[in-house]
Length: 255
Image (cartoon, rainbow, N blue to C red; front, side):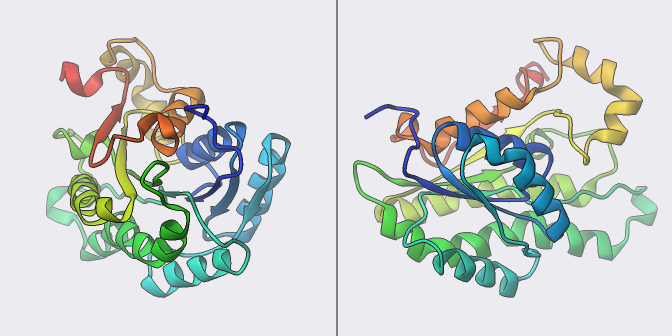
């Protein structure tokens, strides 16, 4: 068995039409997986399929995974096409910034629903498909996308985002303990700064400063994220579960 080979595997990536999700989807395709991507907008899914199709078989299924009903519907749509899923990447996310005195309740609801509740509901909805693929010597893999802002205190006024990502990391550990006996591993990636729509304004304003904060002197590139995802999706990490992997050029460690 090739440690990093995903040939014949089926993966689902939420928020897979742009940014970190697109990087992960491309990496999984290049490793041989058949990949389903999802986002709220059908047009964004179509554009991503056009961009990714040269890398392998990719299908877009639009869904708003901020609700439990849509998480269940997405799992149902995939189950109508596949008998099993080997890799689930819970990547869809949102952020919100506002001063402490003005931070609205709606910002908590929007961010927590998508960032923290959705990974739980999606994992639960996909469990029949994940268990169908899982074996003791070839486990299924759930990858939650957290953030180094869930590991450190950020100077940005993104209170619900930081709290939700810290929650994702703890949820990852809890689900790893719950699902390990069912041959499903659960790990998290905690990205640092990568080029994405969510980070665009921050990088435009402070990109050089942020790059210097990395001990490697740069922000993340697509292959950096793809490599981490393929590792956690593949047999290479077969004895790794409950881990939170910072992919940040050493920013968190140096901090």
